[in-house]
Length: 85
Image (cartoon, rainbow, N blue to C red; front, side, top):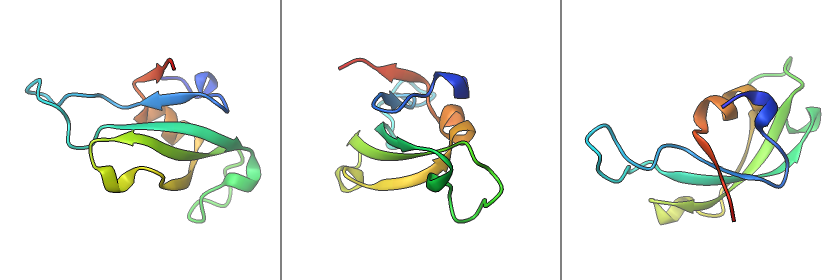
């Protein structure tokens, strides 16, 4: 996806199946819960276009509820599609 397509309040997912067509062990749905320079990851202090997300669904149940900060560009590279709820 393009970074410009990532919006606060929307939910996105990565690819639900692996290369063999089986369910992916790494599938997640992430809701963008905040955006702005204050959301920048600690490891990248120069980037200003950042978001905070919450995992709302995942193959690994232990991941649900996890929150993290990430650059919008990195999130867009991870996301395959928007999840319509």
